Length: 141
Image (tube, rainbow, N blue to C red; front, side, top):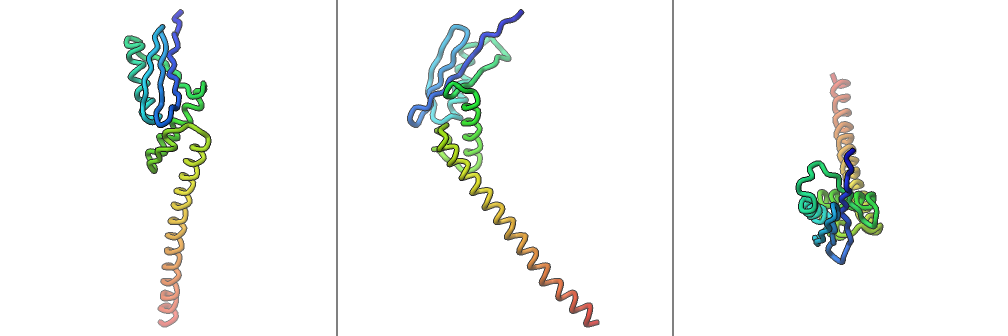
């Protein structure tokens, strides 16, 4: 029976940077990175040093002792950087940063809906203008 030695990557938000500690197989390496996305990339590099010959290894990423907290903060940062660049939301996994990112996403969504509604109204107005002309032409014949 194979036993799997766990490898963990622990993230700590430290001012503008993140401190990453990767531990497993009796080793522990620590480094820093700006932003959680860079920290996640750096964690992969540290895992390679901790377990270079262990292909297909599983790494548990933790923020505040929680894999869910890390995943939420990381995904939020990825979505934020792919949409509008927001350093505050990327650099922080705090609930207030999540609210700010959500508000920003909601505002962008509202703008998209307003633009779509405006386009629908414009199309409807154009159709209404054409319909009376067609009706006049039909009755005028």
